[in-house]
Length: 82
Figure (tube, rainbow, N blue to C red):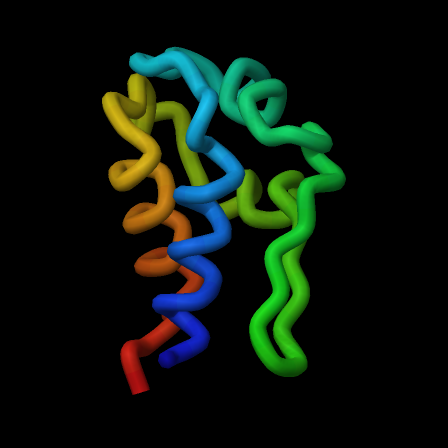
């Protein structure tokens, strides 16, 4: 499994109970189980929700699903399927 797939899966899992749509960065961070401190790890890569949030901009909102959030973050982070 690639780093992209692992991180994406962890984001999807972390947002299982989130209520969508999510309209603001603050609401998105609050949707993660440990807020900005929620951590995703794959190999040597470790990133918090707060750090991942820096990859987003106001035009990304509202998010309609956990899939939208996860795909946007892994794409902006430049994670590949290799």
